[in-house]
Length: 252
Ligand code: OAD
Image 1 (cartoon, helix red, strand yellow):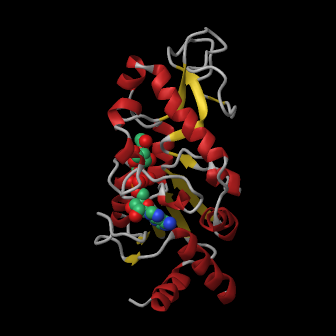
Image 2 (image 1 turned 135 degrees about the vertical axis):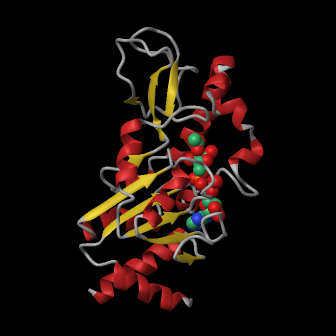
Image 3 (image 1 turned 90 degrees about the vertical axis):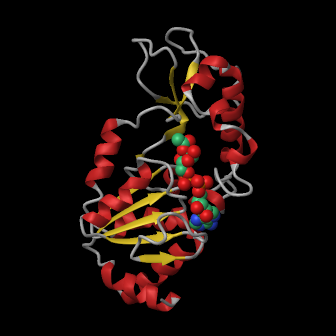
């Protein structure tokens, strides 16, 4: 289908009372300068997941793991949200029933003004006590950049803090996942800027499809989801989302 034909189709279904759910991945932040995980310049080409993003890695060398997260926090702090983030933030106002689910830990959706984000993989700006000491809350925000001591100490017990992200081998926050599953009961489900290979996040699109949602992918590359969605837009998020928004504004 042509680009204009795709936009026509989207404008027909994206009515103000449509239930719209979006899941985003690292590609949405690529134009902001945040590296993605896979692909030629992806983070997982430079470092090994098992050395840096698992509880075992942290138990082995918390300082090394924190050096990597502190480096990413510094890099992300220098980035700004892009037009893709901004359009998604405005969709919380455009649609009365809108849900934004993200796998991103960078906080750029928040900075663009999106409310009530379901953060499946946590946030790089949250920390928690590695030992789970009873005095400490489960997670809290610490946006200090750079962190003065690595690993940073837990203010409650003096043990090491951990980054508030979900590592490989860890389960997702049950409440966040439950709300995400509920949001797959929608009219239009977008999967944007994700390689759609990390589960359970990647399974949400299929859930939405089985419940009758129109499924749409926005990604300049093809992924495992491309052949399964109703509409695949082979475009960058920061280009496609403003184009869709422009059409919606013009038509309504
Ligand atoms: P990936 O790095 O796996 O995939 C990024 C996707 O974004 C690719 O499919 C690219 O084609 C696409 N992309 C690149 N630039 C884009 C742009 N400007 N607009 C739209 N799409 C673009 O990142 P994720 O799918 O987010 O998990 O990775 C999923 C999870 O794997 C991450 O949350 C992280 C990682 O390991 C954990 O750390 C638990």
